[in-house]
Image 1 (cartoon, protein in one colour):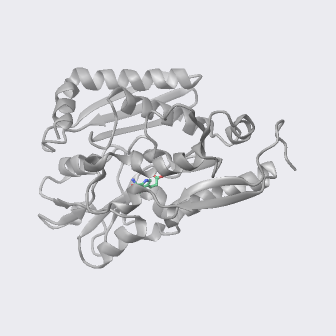
Image 2 (image 1 turned 30 degrees about the horizontal axis):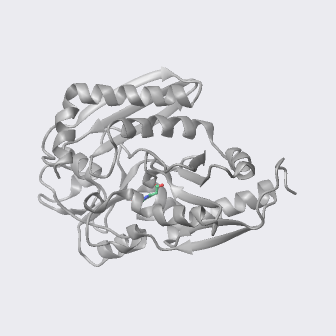
Length: 319
Ligand SMILES: NCc1[nH]cc(CCC(=O)O)c1CC(=O)O
């Protein structure tokens, strides 16, 4: 039965990337729409530029938005009604006419250490090779273990794990959320603590994007929002937005809601020189709504700038 005041499209078409993780996420939303809104849902699988360009770091080819653009085109043309994204990959500013209408409950937001041979990053031998293409992970790994050799690693989760298993790296760093969703949690040897590697804004959360005029869909999907995750991720994304957030800035932002109080931890590294100290800001404030959460994020960004982030950002822009 459909509980919405306005009729939903039938079928509701979800545009999704075709990686196993993207399909898992789209299926998850399909199931919720089916059981909680009585909707008939179909998936439209698509390949994005982000999936095709595997030989270069995303920071060098236009950023994470490459994972969402094709899906937005499908929404624009009416080929699909809804796009399910890893919130981490969603640009801070959506194009006019698009809206982020829901953020679902976050999976484990932490980064995971994955290695066939070593149980923990402290056990890696001097100069060991660790795979990651994320500037955020590079600067934080360098802070933990300046001796490590960090090599680029792109591709979907299965591709990255295969490159590790083929012996290309001693260890790799992946989001725990993706591994857990795909039932690969046993590959996690250790998780990085909140002060060892601060997660990316939105890591572990799913964001649902639609065309703004789809009122019935906005109403139904809005009910899937997990309030604590919504507030936390809006604070995190505000940090990124205020710093001109893109892949070319090694930026971490993680927030948790404790009762009414949002605790936010943000860090900015220097992309040009990963040996420069990480700048960090920690802020807490009671929050009631999205605007409160975003204000906290904007304030954290201002603190990072004052701490010297202006110079770090100038370096990144020259990359
Ligand atoms: N940038 C790719 C990406 N986007 C979302 C996830 C993991 C799942 C999530 O954060 O929700 C990953 C893989 C990774 O970082 O290891």
